[in-house]
Image (cartoon, rainbow, N blue to C red; front, side, top):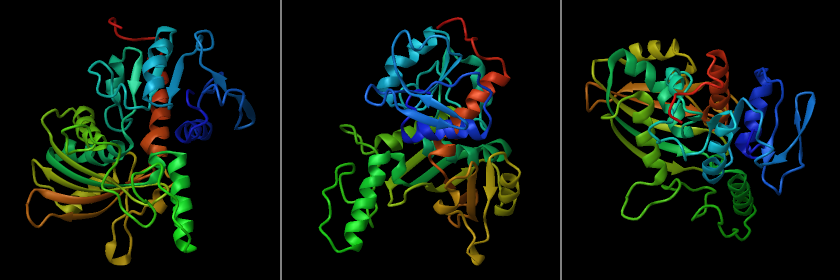
Length: 339
């Protein structure tokens, strides 16, 4: 586990323990600064190691959640040493020969791996889990999605920044200068997730959602428009999705379709105050879907409200599910001829 002391890395280790992942040995890797740190893992105590050419040998699987720079440098090294890498960073996702996989959506894509498998962006992940049953049943022509993303998607420092700012506002004290985000996040909404490249009106997060959705669903011409916002929520990303289907699909048919889909729970009785909430999704493995209704402006469009735990299904759980699938399908130590 590379990046074992980070928010997602520690969650991955927790999910592995919960699911009794069948590993003979689990070794955590961390930065030089965190090397030597002990980690409780079930009844075992693990000690974090630093990455080196010697320390990475002898592994079947390497789960990465340490950022794009580490993945770029050390992912190929682990693969060359014989491991299959499941990478949670954005670095490998859009490489043509790297499968981008969601366990409930396109598991067969694992068959063509060349030593590295990519885990999608957390916002994309929960969305495609909800969309896949619709795509298979009636086809999808166009998506318009707006996200409301929690601060844990940025990391521990962002969560601490929200806490400090909220405390200052409540206590009527001077607000700390923002350091993680460009503006105050407490009691605010920022229409920016990640950065803007020169000449592009869409943020890098929005570009990820659009490109990754097409790749995972196998629909290169799918129309996708995304607007991503950061909200003062600790855990759980929420999404408003407008889906234009190829064939007709009623809201009731959609509810029945999603209720029987793997990894999805339908919570949809808005008159009774029942709909997906970020606080309810936190700690859950499933994606919650509700507010399923007809778009009155288009007979082939539905609106959905989708919520998921961005640290679990949005990152950690899917990484572990992919590792389990690689084991079950006998894909460890096996890769296509061209590496």
